[in-house]
Image 1 (cartoon, rainbow, N blue to C red):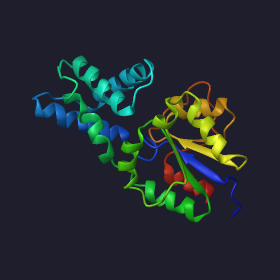
Image 2: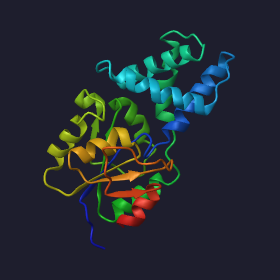
Image 3: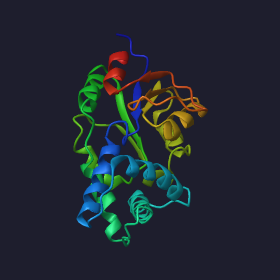
Length: 221
């Protein structure tokens, strides 16, 4: 089969890794230790509101972003915790599980001749913990720690383009806000891995839309 791209880069958390499950489990378990009961949906709703605000306040490591986010979320739930206690969220990240289809789909793409990469809003050491769960290697990795910036800012994509050069590149991601919009703005072909069946937002135009990573492998292999 003719390969339409030479390299595929992926957002990691939300696309390859179940970040919603990881965040909600970490919060529910930590809160339960302090006698506080929280539900998955209220945790995820608060996270979607708080984390972008923390990231917009100036660059800090993602470990610090997660800790500050956890602290503010907990206070919003009426669960007062200090900074050291709020580290539970960052400490849980390397254990967040990959989606069931991730490794098989990545292996299919790799075996079909695609080179693989990751563009992630994360620290290098936290990503290293996650990398142990993948069966395939990634030849290109760009993190927030490396570029001192968080998507949807363009730095991840600019650095990736410098490294990829003129090779045919597809970026695949679940987040419309963090990935599809900036990739579209920069003219980078992109695939929306719409795991949650969300309605499309504004200012993005994916070249492909699939429901999961297996669907992307079906389309490209």
